[in-house]
Length: 262
Image 1: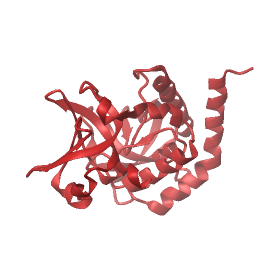
Image 2: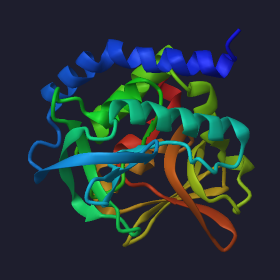
Image 3: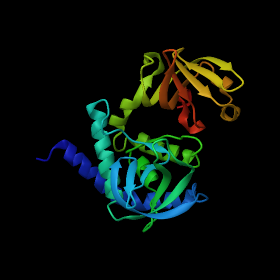
Image 4: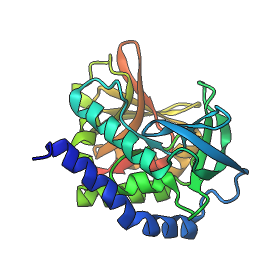
């Protein structure tokens, strides 16, 4: 009998064929990135679930999503990372021709190209496909947030259906009250809004008195954080710390969910 992990991987890969046309249709309808600069490229290989290498040796980081790391802190996330890598490799095999829609911010601090990647032969938006299959989490990082709302909805569909790797990806969830301040990397954190302070350069929102969430003025004007007082919310992004207190900059409204509404 085949190992359960092998059977799960086969099921994931076969599911790609069933949703490819739907994902392509969704991307064509939304066209959230169609005003970005576009260039043609050819795939050499996939590095992990959200990073690939082109034939000219440039590395590309997919905009708007985050997948588990191959060297993740626990076995479940490492398994999720390998499955996401395998699925992305099946979507973008060596030699596949793609269109790169280069982000408003074109490179990250590691020198990788930041882009939306679309298969040229059928218009499949790769990030959307990964989200719909439960292989990735939506993660809006300013200023490359053109598709944040569409990506959040694609993720929500997979979450409601418990599609793909949601049991493993839940490893990213933490309660704000449980944060030690030593956490780093990408997390989804939930807690009650216990205090809100407005400053000139940012609005400061505390979750369970233990996570310091910072919101820049433009985004704060959209969100109106004062209405969140005493509500339970979930935020996502890359954790840091200051004075041994967990800190997270909110990058976009789609990175915040009001759990009291759900």
